[in-house]
Image (cartoon, rainbow, N blue to C red; front, side):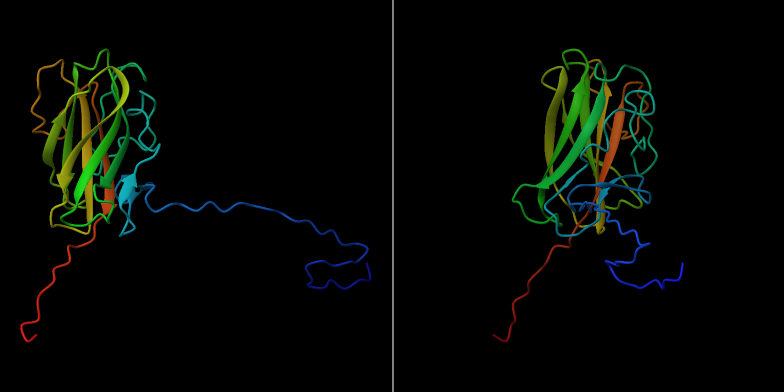
Length: 217
């Protein structure tokens, strides 16, 4: 049309059309877990944080009760039970791993593991087993607590453990299952259970720093 285009942000040619687009860039907080395709579970992979929160990534159970996004959300493909109705039967909704002293997640730190669960009926028939693994790549699960709900419905339960010396990426698991009050041992972290919900949370762990005294001073 006889006019030469110019590379300006606000051209004034008679055939120009200048429009703006505004957009928001959401910043992901390092303590809010994101789903990891590597670990197949919610993960906080930034070292130095004081807690890791699965947020809403674990809501529901399996592919029928909820359903749960990216189910089963376990690093070893441990499956969830498929029986029940969401918000009536058992489900594990959220896991938070937080240091008690507010410092970084590191070897030797005392950690409070908080689980948000939905218990069946009055809760007396359900139980939560808590585990940790010092290596999220090749997990060996160690049970550190067994806790029963205090009521039915949605609630938080928790247990504490000390992060052992191990890998730089570790994990916790909560196995929330129906046991009809029979006091299951939880020795098998992936025991089949029609109403069971097992979820993992992966997080970066800083090494424990050891100081040595200079003998020449």
